[in-house]
Image 1 (tube, helix red, strand yellow):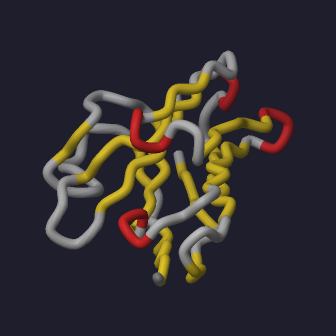
Image 2: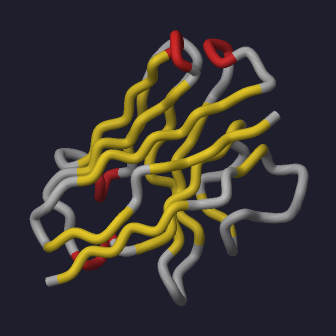
Image 3: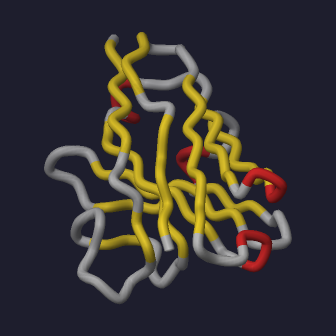
Length: 125
C-alpha cells in the first residue's frame, strides 16, 4: 500500500494550489482518504475526507476555500485550495484510513492508516 502526494509549493496570499494524492495497492473506490496538515508548533489537523463513494467532508475553517474530490479511474484524490492565507502554511499529508480528526503529529504512530511523505505548502503575505 502506498500513497504519494504532489502539488505543494509557494504562493502569495490569495493564491491557489491543487494537491494530488495517488494511491496504489488497495481498492481505491472502497477507501476513505483524508488530507491532514501540520504547521510548526501545531497539532496535526484534519483538512478533508473523501470517502470511497465520493462523499466529501471539509473542516469548518476550510469550507468555502478548499474543495476535495476524487478520480477513481486514476486512483487519485485532490485538494483544491483557493484564497490561501499565510496561516495555511503547513506540510500537507494524504492518508488512507481515517481514525481520528486530530493527532499530535503527522504522521502518527503506526497503526493509524497509511500516510504519504507530505508536501510543503507555503503562503506568503
